[in-house]
Length: 270
Image 1: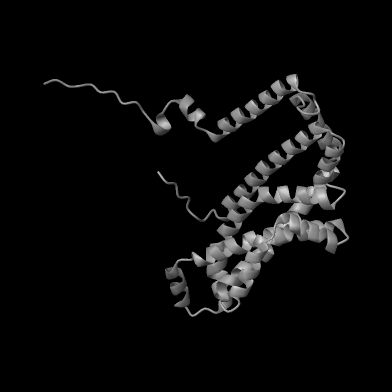
Image 2 (image 1 turned 90 degrees about the vertical axis):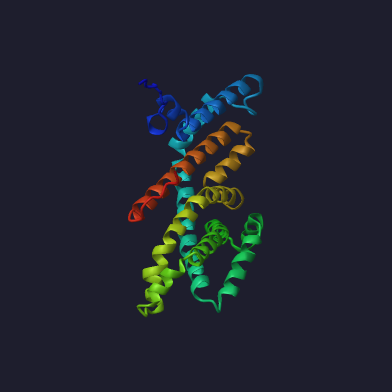
C-alpha cells in the first residue's frame, strides 16, 4: 500500500509574512508618500523652486508654520469643530423630523434637497453680502453646506429601520418620546458617525476655502497670502498639514465610534 505525499502551501494568516506586509494599506500609503517625495525631488532639479520646491524646503516651511503660526491653526480647528458640531446637531434633528413626522416631511425634505443643489461658491458669495463679521460668514457657509449631509443620512437611517423592530417596540404602547429614545436614537447613531467620517475631509476643504474668501486669519487666509507672495513651498506645506489633519481626524472619529458602539458585534465578510 503506497501513500502519496502532498504539500499544501499555507494561505491567509499563515501565509508568507512578506506577502501580508505588501497587502497592508499602511505599506501602500508609505509607498505612495515616498513616490510623491521622490517626484518632487526630481522635479525640483529641473524646475524653478517657485514651481517645484524640494521636499527639504517644504519641511522647513512646515516647521516654521507649526512653531510660529499655531494660533492660525487653532482658529481653523475651532471653526471646523464648531461648524461640525452644529451641523451634526441640526442635521440630526432635521433627519429625525423627516423620519418621524410624515405630515411635514415633504416640506423639510424639499428644503434640504434645494440646499444641496446650491453650489458652495454661491453660499460663500451670499455670506459675503449678508454678513459683515468673518466668523459669522464662515459659520453660515459651513452650516448650510454640512447640515444636509447629516439630515439626509439620518433620514435614510430611520427609513432602513427594520419593520420588526418597530412593531416590537409598538407592542409595548410607547409614546413618541420613548420610540425616539429607545429605538430611533440608538439606531441612527451609527449613521451620524458614518456621516462624520465621510464629511470631515470635505468640511476641512470648505473651511479653508471659506477662510480664503471671507477671513483674514486662519489656514485658508495664510494659503491666500502664500499665493499672493508666490510662495508655493508654503502652499505645499499647508497642504501636507491638512492631509495629516484629515487622516488624524478620521482616526479619532473611528476610535470614538468604536468605543461608543462597542456593544455592537463587528461583522467581517469572509
